Each structure stands twice: as C-alpha cells, then as structure tokens.
Length: 135
Image 1 (cartoon, helix red, strand yellow):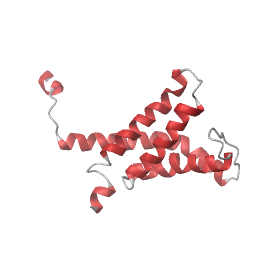
Image 2 (cartoon, one colour):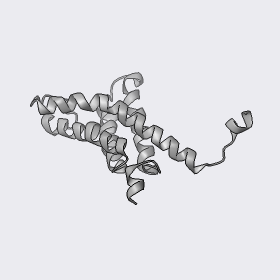
Image 3 (cartoon, helix red, strand yellow):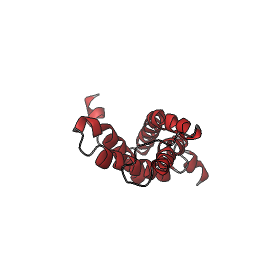
C-alpha cells in the first residue's frame, strides 16, 4: 500500500482525472464569487472596486467575464485555457494590487486561485472535457 502511495510514476489517466477534479473544484468555487457579480451587473449596479483606474463599470464587466463566464468555460472544459487566463488575470490584480497592503491571509485565496489557473493554462483541460471530444 505504501509503495503505491509513494510511487511517482506518471499515469496519464490519473493526471487527466486530477485535471478534471481541479477544473470542477476551482470553477465551481469561483462561480460562488462570479454569480453575485453577474447578478449585480444585470441589475445595473455598476459600483465596484477599480484598482487599475479603468472605471468601476468596466472593471465589473471584466470580473464577471473572468469569474462567471470563465468559470463556465473551465467547468465545461471548453475554452479552458482562455477561461483560466481570464481568471488568472483577475486573481493577479486581486492578489497583487487590490490586496497589496493586506496581510497574507487576506490575499491568500486570490493567490491560490491564481496558482490553480496557472496550472490549467499550462496543462489544458485534459481528457475529460468538451475540448478533448472535439479534437
């Protein structure tokens, strides 16, 4: 049993299963942040943080695109790298700019999401995705 646990052999099916778990968990959790922003946007409430000085309405649209639409892309495995790039951009701004002066514990969640998105940008969606079925 211990030998199986410590085995570092690369098994493609396990990697693909790991990518599926990563995609579903990260995108599912990010949807809990993106959906309320989506509703806010639909209701016409454009008040939002503007850490880059681009305008709060524009920043809200970008956040909704990344956190809601990007999460749906990652969840389905269709456009995973694009969705992850959107998410990574938003989380980089959140972690390094918006929460720049906050303690690490405050910015930690954004940085953890950023790390997961970088893994998805590098690896893609894996075998268990819409992209895999189309190519």
